[in-house]
Length: 119
Image 1 (cartoon, rainbow, N blue to C red):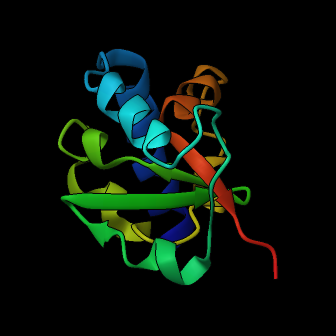
Image 2 (tube, rainbow, N blue to C red):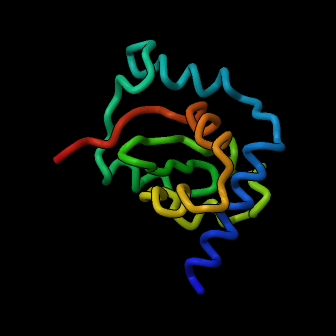
């Protein structure tokens, strides 16, 4: 049952990625640049640091050891608060569920801010 709910939530997320135009990319780019380097992924974050970003107004997720700031997308998410289920945590399993078309995998890159630190 939980898998079905996660699949449904992520399907809605995919739909949003595909159908809703993203605004605020420049804000995202400013955030990357403020890390002291213009290249994406130059920053790494601990799991604890990511965990602090677990709110509607400050939402980071981890997918395959990469960190994404999806704050600007939370209000646009067609699944409502479902996107917050893994806010500040690892969303890999659900993100790669069968409900996602391949286009969503390219779109998530717009939210990429760095890598998860390896221990």
